[in-house]
Length: 253
Length: 340
Image 1 (cartoon, rainbow over the protein chains, first blue to last red):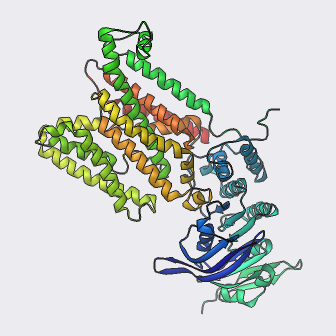
Image 2 (image 1 turned 120 degrees about the horizontal axis):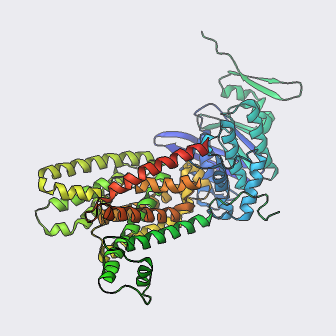
Image 3 (image 1 turned 60 degrees about the vertical axis):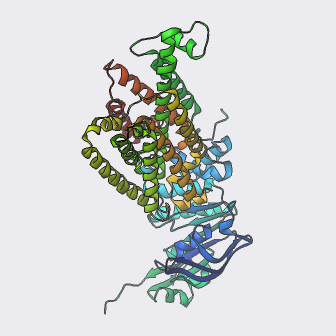
């Protein structure tokens, strides 16, 4: 079971954001899109959701994504629109709309939301306003809504970018919970060390093209990865075998 | 252990909706009873439902031909403005959005002024048609100017402001040029329900009912529009299409309300915030309750407008602002307490 991307091109006006991309994404795995800013990672996620106008084809289980409205795909944006006056309970309950119908509030759904609030350590805050959550809590509320959706595929745009180290791991662990339930995870991530730690597949994108893709370990240790970042990164391996990727200090000539 | 154990409570409690319905009913019966001639509640009730022991003669005429259409029109206009306000606030992610935001009010004002300043006196009777046309035309122009047909709520909002200012400028010019029309234009702008007859109720109820049925049908999905378009799409709605449906229906309701009763301010902002503030829920599951609360609010305001200085009438807009503003502030203050 795969998502087959063939000759995908996305243009915004004159600008070509994604340039003739072809890729197979395996279901049930965590695939991470990495690459410099402006490479087209977010646009790729939107195209996978079916929200970016594209040429070429993206087939999920054989069906073109923008035509298939029955797919249950959760989308976690990098900077979400924060609804004024909405409580955490209302926010997470929105995730049930695809499973349960809009505004049904069924007992099953309310139980499920109770469960995901507990999983994401938000239980007890369900009557707080979303607008008043801290960065870490907001990210967990987003993940909770995605969990409530019980999706087959979850797309996450920089799920850890606004978080401190501790919260980064706790959010990523929550995403791993999803994967244990057979959910396919596709995320973008700036932090290559975290990408190497959690993702099974890594796709390196630069200037709208795929430079390389494959098993996380192989991609991280390949010389082309350094090329994608203009040789400005170094890859070290800890004693435990975990790779750590850090940026070079820039030298002024 | 209850069946609800291990579940969060319902987002919307339907007892609130029932409560709003009861209040509306009570306010309506009160409004039909009170006036220069006070009529006993039970008599009013019996007359309304054609039961034995109801009023006869002059009282019956007062109830059925004067007060009842006025109460019904007030309820319709209040429901239309409150619901549209709530919908605009959701669609534009803006708690200060009101039904007049996209130029509906200024457009209708211009239409009404054209009718009132016309040298053809026949046109005065056609004021509602001119106001309705002006309102709809202004909103439509805002749509067209904002380009990509609603790609971005903010661009629509800005073009609405521009169109509104333009229409107001022409209206002011016409008003100054025909100074005799100043007073009727002014009194129309402040809004009143004195023109309420069964024929006004008949045509306005038709449009308002269509608009409200559409809005109540999509109400729950409107919650999705509070998120970004990608999130809304992933939850199963088509955000662009839903926005157009919602704004079109809200505009139909607003333009109808304005052409039937002039510019009644404050209802569209106060009532949605009142219901949301008191229930601590922002969800549009509350839309029916907001409509009924808006209806009750306006019927009550109109009762004040026609009894406080009786036999003279106050413009209803004065009452809605005079009562609404302090009440609104109290709710805001309490809400902040809850939030802290």
